[in-house]
Image (cartoon, rainbow, N blue to C red; front, side):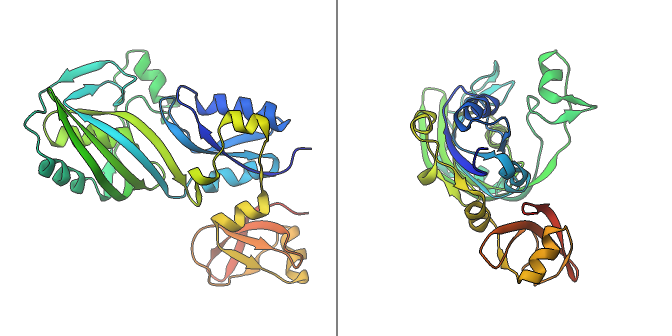
Length: 290
């Protein structure tokens, strides 16, 4: 059996997240592989892949903070809000100043309501929005609350009738960077779309620990599941008696470690479970040891 743990992949451009999972199944020698947080084909960077028991961590890791570097083009709108779509409108952005860009970015920072792109994986009446959109349907998606913790403009470059904005975005799960590009352009009255996207961090895992598919083909580096949990979530060490309780799916008294998943480790340092505190108890989210 393959080792349970995480593989931090530096996803190449033009690969879907599913393509990466299929490749990692061959490299890891197991069908039990999944990923946390989809990256669009045009995007590159950190894709967290789980192997064996670590696939049960992925839903929790997908909810953590993410960081991206991006380039947003003002003056051109597309039907996908990124460079892979068809141009739907153009407007000269020659008069847009850096000060106006910074003002527009400030309006999209913090807790905001964001309408996802029409071409997204969100389900509408049981069908993916992108499938409906590609079938020619008009897809109306409801705005959703997301948090943009940081939206730092690195450079503003004007050429001809377009303006390119390089930025670093730190955001909550569920935030669409191409929707930020669309809304930045819309707020400035010229439209906009995303031309480049690289995810540099998911939770505690960044590009410094990511490996390309070629590198992983040479050596499939797996971060053991215990180390992965200890890096991503608060840690709680328990007694042998408590460990037995956890192994059987029992609840522990709360330890006041706050909201969100907590990694529970036994007396020998072995990962036992992820738990979540609710009131005076900590209930199991996933049990890894039996």
